[in-house]
Image (cartoon, rainbow, N blue to C red; front, side, top):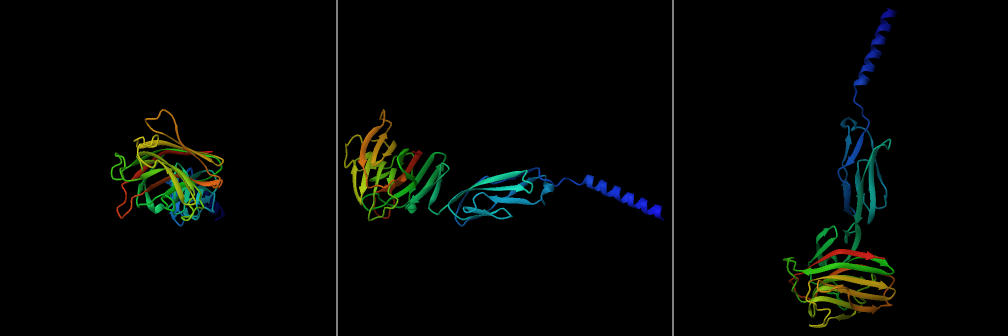
Length: 316
């Protein structure tokens, strides 16, 4: 009887050993996320899907981590919750930390956009709709008539900049209904703007340089507004170098201390043309710097305007 029990025990051990040898490995060899970049708005949720290999490792625990949980959190199922404007990275790994994949997440406030991988704020966002935002090109379609003049406010897409800067872009004002044609509406413009971010309709303070249909026809316009009182050029026709009959301009605003220089270069210009210089000691060190869009058209019919901005750059 004792000999029989020993034989059974040996057979049982051999059987278990062979079973372990035939069981597929459950260790993860790779992890990948379907989403590698996400843009969410505050309050949004999104669940990331992870693909792991081999498939037999699907029951192994995954570890999810947010690099900046104040911007967005992630739970054990890969569900992201967007909390505040900013950027973070959501990563997933096996328990050993041997294999990992990550997703770059940008969280925006309601009136923010992404341009050229940076977060830009907007002012009067209801005035426009983003038509194109790819690579270095941003195009805005006018959706409501609004004017940058005296106490009136158009729309502004900007970043906050402190100190000296150079702001440049190539700007073209075209018809919203036909982007191949120049806009023809009365005072339909878009371009560069540096504005006091604390300004109010009762106290507008800014300088701008824009392209489109000026009071003198197609060309470029400069404007300085102090305490909601605007001074601009051109004020009429045949005022070169402003009224150059061009629909596209390279525009440049340079701030050095209190001095702002505004220059343009069109296809008919061989070099930069200085249009104006403003001394603005009233403007604070920190400004809202970016691009604008506006029209003097009144009434329920929206002006036929779309403004294309290419290679917007702020250099400090």
